[in-house]
Image 1: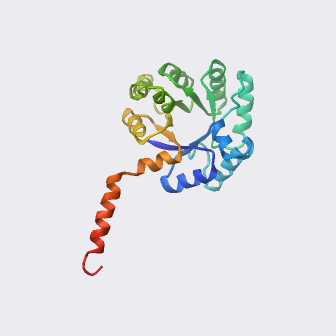
Image 2: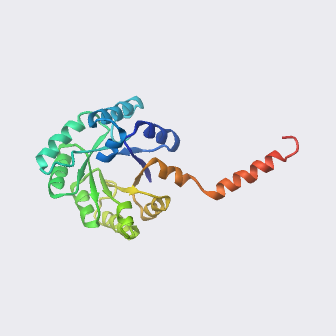
Image 3: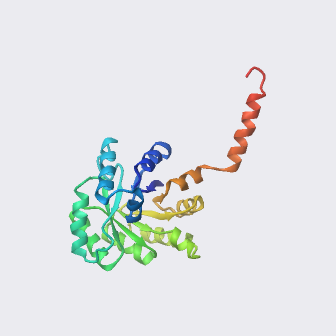
Length: 228
């Protein structure tokens, strides 16, 4: 399963890449805002960093960048997607799962501009991404679970549907808005291709109280070993 970082902050991207070996980055307008940079500056910084790392395109290291969320016309989304895509071959364009968004995603894929259909909250919505050959589909987890929904079956249904129709390997499933290590595990058990989460969630997933206890036990033993 691939690990993506949900952030537009360069310090977090660098740390996550060096520490956890992340396989890509996902961003949205809120992440751009939290970076403290204008939109174009933030995405150009990510493009420059990806180039410095030697990544050739989205197959090496995909960076999902979302179009202006105020756009509700497919042609306007396509125009902005082309402008963003031209900045880096690593960029994958995030398009919302709306009628205009689905039209835009389908046309962009035919042009060879890879897309990530986002704000997906049901298997029915996820079907469109597979049908259109989007590079990614992003079913959200955290938002639904905060609303009291159990997402294990929801993700399993998407994985099963994709297997039924040969979408697996063509459209990768990114479990989005991951808030906890348990959600990582649920998505991995279901067979999702990727998870995307903030840096702290990766740190939480690495931590376990018994690991700390074991380290303390072994450190004490080392210190009390004759000759050490």
